[in-house]
Amino acid sequence: SYVLTQPPSVSVAPGKTARITCGGTNIGTYSVHWYQQKPGQAPVLVIYYDTNRPSGIPERFSGSNSGNTATLTISTVEAGDEADYYCQVWHTSSSRYVFGTGTKVTVL
Amino acid sequence: QVHLVESGGGVVQPGRSLRLSCAASGFTFSLSAMHWVRQAPGKGLEWVAVTWYDGSEKFYADSVKGRFTISRDNSKNTLYLQMNTLRAEDTAVYFCVRDRGSGGGSGTDVWGQGTTVTVSS
Image 1: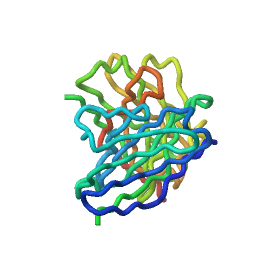
Image 2: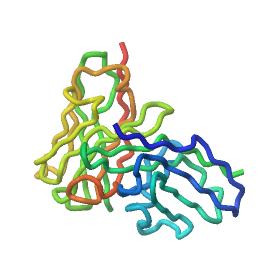
Image 3: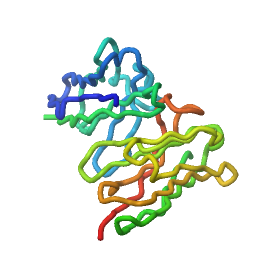
């Protein structure tokens, strides 16, 4: 089965940049989606198809994907960005979504 | 306003069955693929199953294949998950989720608030 690996945690000071990686074999050949989940809430889509932001998502959120690593970048981090973040791909050969292991972002 | 509202969760003994429902509103339900995603207490997200917009295709996670059945009634704007032979490891919050496309793969942009399933004797 296809595995997506994320760092368990990332810490960042307010105003700085947070980068969350998502590693998977040849992930660059897949489309990656990213979700933000705050405690007690349902996840929210923040990036789809590697680089696209849904309406209402700040420009501070951006994504990239190449080779074996996809990255979610949060610029000018705010306290409200503190949450768990998950990457996701559609594994075409098995017709299944696969989620990454999740990363807890802490704003110092 | 786009909404997904799950129901049917509860406490059930191992080996028993439960059926979850998800009522959709505010969008054309029959044009969207729909998923169930679950989250065990303190754990990450786990995709469970998908049904294509017209119900023609259904796919399952290995962990539930053969025990769970996803279905939809487009005339009632409702998604279902029939869960049989439940195990302790099925304990989780179950989310009803809309795909951005008519099949899977486009990302999921609408999530319900979830319904809790607890499997315990």
